[in-house]
Every structure is written in structure tokens, then in C-alpha cells.
Length: 187
Image (cartoon, rainbow, N blue to C red; front, side, top):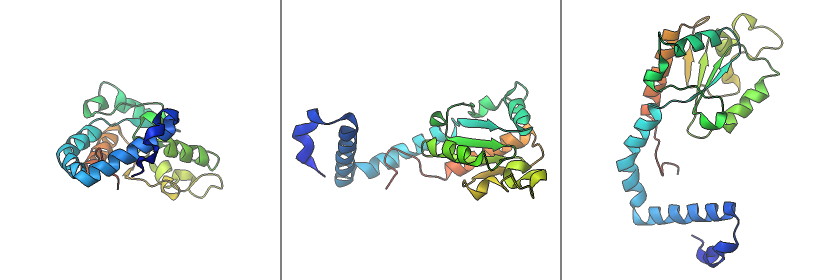
């Protein structure tokens, strides 16, 4: 822990101060044992909140986007499961990709994935996103999202029904339940 910067805290930039203060807090919580206690007590609450408030980034490229939109309608009502579609990657924790992925789109999709905050998950919806679909041997279509982004849940179908999408997100919630999400979980 570097306390030599403490007297110069007024002259620091905001970024330098945040980096310094995070380091001080991390060291103090580790040394006193507060870190382990907070993780033990508050970890399950944070995990519950994360898995029951899923914010997918809707990235509908093709016909699967219609099924995704139908899932948001009143008949299937995915909001009762805590799924609210967002349009900004910095506000999302799930990247939902459906439709074929061209090689020209690949870098942009990777950039969207990297802009999302941690913890983040990826769902590949439909045959085109999973394996390239009918364009599997095409020169310009990527043969699956998992070739350049780690995928957590696959939702098969061409196009998959809204019930399948809800089932896929329920499986993602089970995966989230088994993951460690909390205040000081990073080590």
C-alpha cells in the first residue's frame, strides 16, 4: 500500500485518485479480514440481483430478431423474468446475438463485447449465430459466434421460438447462480 501519495491527494487527477483509493481500500479490507466477511454476507445478495435483472444487448441481424421481439411482447413477456433489452453495451451484461455474422461485422461485434462491463455473458441464438446456418460454407460468413467470442448459452432453432429464448435465459440464470459475483470477488 502506497501511502506516500496521501499528502498530494489534492494535486492528483481524478483517475490517479481513484486508482490510489481503490488500492488502499483493497489492501485494508484484505489485511483486516473485512473482505472475506463482506463477500460471505453480501455475495448471495449481489448474485441474486445480477441474475434477476438481466440486461441483454439486442443485436438482431436477421430473422431471429423478430422472434426476439415477439418474446418482448405481451404474450411471452420476458420482463417478468427480469430481462430488459438495452441498446448501449455499457449498460448491458448479456450479449444476445442472432442472425448470420459476416466477416465484415466480426470486428464490430468483438468491440461491442469488449465495451460491456464485467461480469458479462454471451448468448448465441439461432443456427446462423451458432454455426453459420445455411451459409456455413460461404466465403463471407463466420462459422459460429464461438470462433471469436466465448459463448455461454446456445439457443438452437431456425428461427428459435420465444419459448426457447426464455428457456435459454433461464439456463443462463442457473449459470449465473453458480458464478461468484460480489463487491470484492476479484482476486
